[in-house]
Length: 284
Image (cartoon, rainbow, N blue to C red; front, side, top):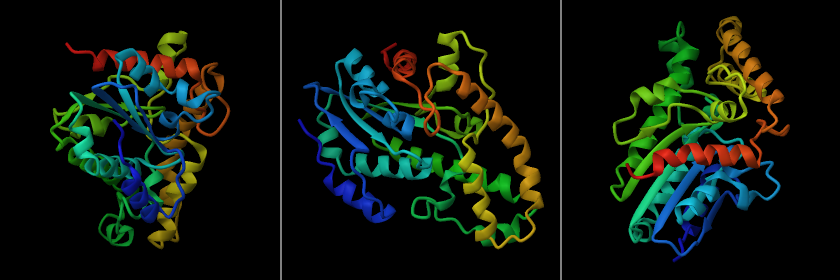
């Protein structure tokens, strides 16, 4: 069977004004089961030598004899990725319902990337600042996470979906685990913690923002909300920068993460993540 994603791709291109090429890939393994993997560049498989054969989604599909729909957007935020995933699923219900089983795995990325995702996170920064200027930055990040919960709960309304597993890459969002309904299976470790377990590394610190450019991205809320005095912003992000530095130090030292972008995992790192997810996918 095949899945027609043309309409959804056109929708996404119009919304993001971006020319997508291979961010959505369907692998037909002639199975009556389907695995959908969704995330950012880590799920996309950036930096892999043989990307389409080495992504963790393909390892899962092989191990479980399933078809695979891989959705990966390099550098994009969770709001866009989840909104897009929801549209993919809604626009292909007739095809998806033909499977005996459809499992969805979402690997969330860091916060802050949604600042410029106006279509998937249309937020009134100016109005919110006027009402919440004493807690502005923390509340913006929390509301971004609430937006992810909204999209995830919308996705979960599709009753043909079997298991919906929520993982995380190099970050950790406690609020997501606490706010999502019991419909979801939430992993107890993130990707880099699994690499640590397998490589016998010291586990990295947990934080919500990690890459260097993300702090520049988040800083744009000051321009949008016309905040001239950014001293409160600097005070707010200093502890987050300290944690981000620790995560990046871990990534720099890992033999299973590359040097490009957000230090994407290599082939072995993908295998370890797939093996970890297997325990959540297997029938109990």
